[in-house]
Length: 263
Image (cartoon, rainbow, N blue to C red; front, side, top):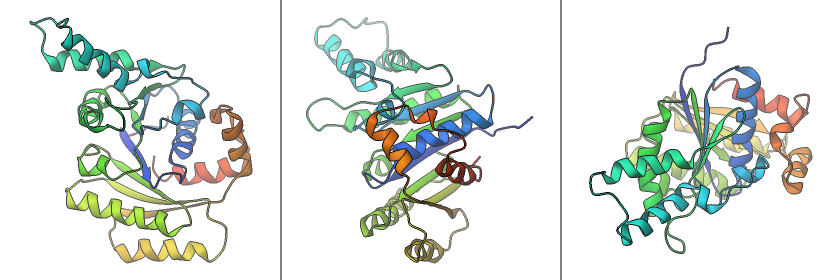
């Protein structure tokens, strides 16, 4: 019997590097390798891509942002019971936003109040992770592309941080900035994994390898590299469920070999 230690794994990096896709493939790997484990997927990105990648339509009212918007309206209309604390109601709304799938649960944060506002959702996310993580063996978090997620210490209970970079100057720059910010705000992780996505098999990989080696921290490790996959791109473009990717697929075999290092 394979025993899995409790994990909270967050995928981060510059926008467009493939964080959401890789999170879903990590989910696929966990479901394949471990039987009867409780998994929660938290889509903390306002762009909310996880539902699309797994073929699940999630409307705004089902998200934490949607629940908080309804909660705000109830306060304005004085529909909140005076004998119930705000924290209790927020906790109840969060649990109400949980979407139960066949093999895992998903929680989509959604957008915040007002155009472009995500501040209060970020604040609630810290509390949400604390509350829910106790009930799951593994929590997978799709972090927003910006640095605010870490600057606000939202990821303080994350055990494994996976920073994804593509073969671009900005991808590597964002990786370095995330490392700087987590150090500045004193966020501690058991492991930080650097993952190169869509890297061709050539000397470009040496650049990322050198960047990681110069950091010189034992807990910051180069997880490996993944080539660009037309097969995965096609599934994402046509909107099929990426969890249905064949286990014999070449890119999936590479990916699960890398993820085995984490769990």
